[in-house]
Figure 1 (cartoon, rainbow, N blue to C red):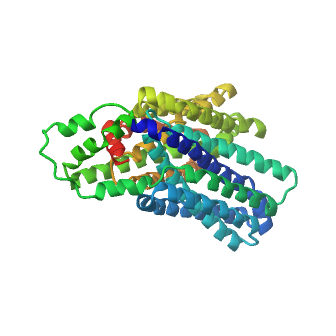
Figure 2 (figure 1 turned 45 degrees about the vertical axis):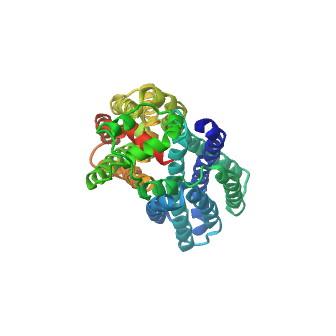
Figure 3 (figure 1 turned 180 degrees about the vertical axis):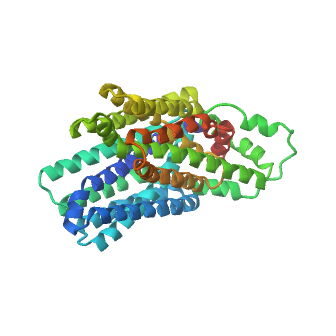
Length: 443
């Protein structure tokens, strides 16, 4: 059986990709915990740092948009390898930057590598997930969270020991290069280029098929990709009998836009929780700094735990239900944050936001990578770009609104966004079964 033959390689690819996601989270966290030391050494003011972070974010978006077409052309394994190497080496920039100008160049390179790795590793994750009989995307994002926790803890520990950035950041860069060299050769090869070749090759000249032949194949039923691979030739032939039309391409473009809108709202809510949860708790209940920090701690803890559980939930109830009920839970969490004047209930609200949001973004990215388009990584890069804009814009929007109303009242914005996501959750799962059949035939 084809699925049995591929199983060991696929399991190795999954484990290797866990390491890559963890590496991405670790490198980002290491830079974040060293921001005070680096800016102090380079004489960068807080105002200038804000501009540099915006520059880094802009370069990340450029990296995302560049990585999509490149992954479609050369394969996501090659792009993941290149991006992970570049991101690891880019960590040397902040380590040795001696002025604001050199720090700007360093952060531009770091942002570009981070954006490119985001897209390429998620494109590879879609490819690996296709070979599994159940959803596995959320687990990859859980390892990103774990990498972030380990990176921040290790970075804080080295600073506590008195290690300088000239020592610490190169050590983490070397660790990143080592993990990349060990993990990326075990990823699945040519994830993007094979799909492009399959879609662009001239179709055979088969006998006419019954009118309902395509519906029988694409509407068939199951997430078991092993079965799809066994019948790959038959499925591929049936699917290619009907040429692509401009209408279908427009449909894919509309789906990309819908998924990008959901990603924007979800990551906006995550950004709000990350940047404003502690301040909201302190502003609302007048608690100390240490107590205020419990808001984001509860959010991040439930977010990570939820990502380890979300794949099993998705396998049972489907993507649409995960997004619909997840965003409904997040909306309930924001409602508690807005209405509660009691510390335990407010903390419960932020924790509920974390558990609700935990499985949603992976479902959106998985859906974006399985639209049936030859350029699936490009589709993902567009959804990523819109989502990343939401991550950046969310905290800024809350800051602007806070000039007019109390911070707690401003939390009505992410609450409303979650309600809209729950209403529009069907966009994540429309024609999912048929798209999975297309993806399996191409793989």
